Image (cartoon, rainbow, N blue to C red; front, side, top):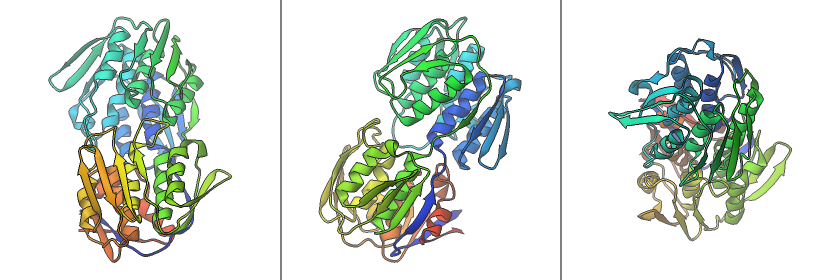
Length: 417
């Protein structure tokens, strides 16, 4: 089994290019099933989750070809609307094909999805949306099966602004009769990117990025070429890497407007932030000031950046409080940070972090994707060597993270055993 080895104490310096967004690419890949025409996606990250989604599309009959950071997806030969458990267990985002399959074939049968065990992420809002549009849904025996003789636009109110449910309903509604309105929709930049992709295909959608999305059904959709937006979580991870190492790093290929919640908190801890053309420069300063933060749906502070910020706050001069409101099990990295000397106490969904001037390298395990990133960041600061296991979690969402950090001066490598 591979492990990532980090030796701390180096100040990062230089420029790093951020890859395309994982969380934007996955629903857009699913949306390629809406048409029999070829779709070309640029700036696609080369990560495990994308490879799993490629497997999903191929299993359904699509043609998929990668050329560098470009994916060419041909949905003309799609002949199946069912996904087995062997594929859906690998990644939660596999459920995003449901909306597209329902829209195109009026049928979908997908096993319950897997992914990181960071908390309950039920499919109830997805199912509610499908039913509102006219589907009969059988949710039993480990599968969700939806069928519809016709899809009719409706007004759908989400109990929570779920990103996945918003995306799935958008795709299911795009060829429904009449108008669909999603209220309390997720507002993440990835929703806007999906809207832009669908509209280029010929859809009529407006409102993404706001709480209400309006979808006017169309009869058909065509092929399109699309550039995926940059990954705001990868960008945030490198920004925190600069802050924790007292570095001077420019993250390029970044949409600054997507980064405001992260920028605000890094300024609070004392980092110097400068926006430059297509990028953000972060200069880390000591001491790191303690801050309180609460994870919230966009435009609040992203839950996907909570573990990385916890690693930084573990080195602050004072006590910080983190409230996790999105996923109930997203503190699994706490025990691993404690192995490195961090002083963190968890009470339900609240973590109290008493910063310490030193962390010590240790053998730790990545419990999920973002927890793995947090351990790498802690390793950049810690004295001695940090050895991180379960690197498959990290590879799900970060493209060549050790190579990128090494280019900034980090002492980091990947080893077998």
